[in-house]
Length: 94
Image 1 (cartoon, helix red, strand yellow):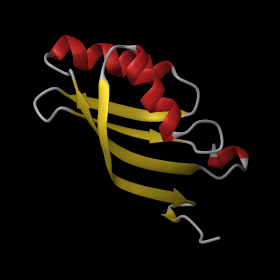
Image 2: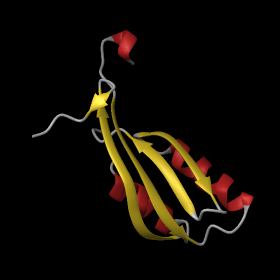
Image 3: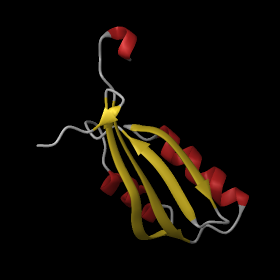
């Protein structure tokens, strides 16, 4: 995207997710979130019972990711490790 003249906005979070119990759950979550608008990357871990997701906050949100996970039958128990980046730097303060 940068080569086309656009900056990349990113927000990364780690979600504590109840219900991740197997590698099949990991694949299911990664497949659904990977197709969602605004999700740049994601990875799920049933061992850690967590999902790390990077979204473009201009086209999606952490709340939308939480809704998607809940629609799959998982429960988001917490949000941690939040960071925002813009142009490879921390998100500008408002």
